[in-house]
Every structure is written in structure tokens, then in C-alpha cells.
Amino acid sequence: MNRLLKKYVPITKAAFQYLKARTLGRRIPLYVGFFITQKCNLNCIYCFPDSPNRKNETEFSTEEIFRIVDELYAMGTRYITILGGEPLIRKDFGLIVDYMTKKNIIVETGTNGYFTSSKIKDLKKLSLVCHSIDGDETGHDKNRGKGSYRKIIESLELCIANRIPVQMRAVFTKYNMDSLEHLLTLAKKYKTSLGLAEQAVVKSADNEYIMSAAELREFWKKVRSYKRLGYPIDKSSALLDRIIDYPLDTPVDKIFRKGEKAPQGYSYTKCSLSSGYMFLDCDGMVYPCATLFRKYGKSIYDPGGLQGAWDYLTQKDCLFCRQSVQDLKSYFFSYDIKALPTVIENFLRK
Image (tube, rainbow, N blue to C red):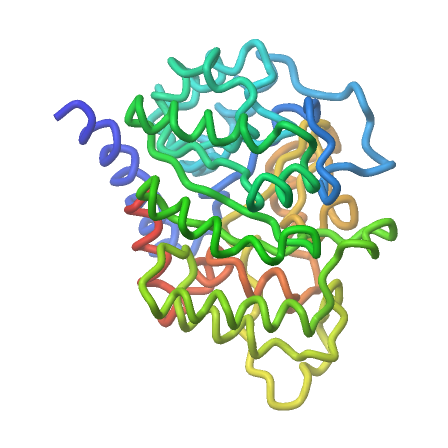
């Protein structure tokens, strides 16, 4: 009974907050990706927070995080994903989790698996622990570092043994594009779902391993085939159709902006991520999404504070991009009826 209450009381409160805001026509940051650190023990080749403009030592103190959580809650936030870096690397990770969950905020995090055993007590309080696993041992270690595959498998098995909800999540590059079958086999073995993602931000040094548009289309076709066979993939067939139909001759990092015409024959849903979601970086910068990380945002330390930074996101002029087409949150906040059942299904599974 306590386990059910822990899961469904926050869900009920989040749903109520969302419905109230929608009824009143208010825009609230219901869901926040909160970077609590940029420190990490790994050096993944595609990590989008790895930016030359990022201040190496900047991150919030424990007290600052508590204050920000209070402000977010007052603004309407009821769902937080704790991000990094490697979030578990912070010594006060447990204090942060406690502070958030005591407000009945739904809290999840992601991990590379290296610190799971020392944080298992804290992880039991979360709604989901997302495990970053990119393929078989060869492909995963090439993306993330030697020995990291074995650590993430150990973490998955430890969380499952402690009845902690888990999901597997993979970022695909040329190095691991042939590992899909391996990951789906693992997902079935561990009775969880597999989240699949392309590289969120393309940097100039990425040309060696980034997949071409043609390779990406063939990859997603293969994913759709497995989805139709019943494999636990976290995207609906309808959403996979939209990804596959994305114009092949459009650069993968292209952002379509207001005033631009979409490619002929392509029907898109306007990105609505910033209608209910934001990234809050550990240096105080607020962004609408991963694609615009370090490109469009505002600091909570500027005049207007956190509320001002949140309001600023409405001024962005983008319509859609390859990433928004793939992001269920964007469809959710745009009230896209076709995608909504899958969003709800994934949410309840967590």
C-alpha cells in the first residue's frame, strides 16, 4: 500500500496541477530537467553539456537548490528529472532527493552506474532511474569509456533487485548503430523499456561518428519493425512514422523558424516543449530544450529571476526540428491527440 501511495499520490497531484493550469490558461513549468552538477567520471563522446562556454566549477550549493525547488514548486513544477554530469556524484544527492520528494514532486534521475551501490537508499525514493546504456560492451565502451558497460549492467541488476523502477536509454552513433538487437534483448530480460535517442547537439568534432540522415532513417525503420513485433520501445508506431518521414535532405541540426516553410509534403506539429518544460542548468541558465543548449536561454540571476527566465522562453522563434519531432513531451504539451496515449502509457509505466 505504501508503495502504491508513493507512486500515485505525486502522479495525482501532477495531473491536477496540469489540468488546473490548462483550464485557467496558465503556462507553468510542470516538468523541469534540473542539472545539479556538470561533474562526471566519464567522458562520453557526444555529451551535449560538454561545451567550451561552460564554466567548469559552477554549480548550485545545497541551499540554493532547496530555494530553487521551493520557487519551482510555487510556479507549478510537479515533475523533475535530476540531471548532470553524473547526478549521483554529488555528496548531497540524498538530501536533494529528500527535499524534492517530500513535496510530492515526481523525481527521476539518470546514471552511468558507477555510484549506484553507494546511493541505493536514495534511489529507492525515486519514480525512475534511467540507465545510460548504448549497446553491447564494445559499442557502449567506445561511446562512454572502457569498463563502463559492466558498471551499468551491475547497476541495472542492483536496482531491479531492490525493486527500483528502471529504464534503459541509448544514444546512437556510428559506433553502436548495430547494437539495437542486443539492447532489446536486454530490455526484455530486465522487463523494462528501451528509450532511443539521436545525438541532441551536433558539434564540429562529431563528424567521425555521427550518423547520416540516410543511416538514421534506416535505423528508425528497423526500430519500427521491432516495435511492431512487440518489443518494449518507448515510442509509438505513429511517432516512429513521423521520425522516419522527416525530410531526408534536411541537415540533422537544422532548426525551422517562424517565417520558414517546411519541406514540401512534410506535415509537422509545432514544438511546444517550452509550454510546460525547461532545462535548468547548474550555472543558473534556463533553456527550452537540449537542441538550444548554449544557444538560447536566460539566467535566473538576471533581473526577473527564475520566473523571468521561464517567461523569456516564450520569445523563441523556432517551429520544429529533428529533436522536437522525436520528443513525446513536445506532443504532450501541444495536446497532440495521436501521441497522447503513448505519453500516458509511458508515464504510468514509470
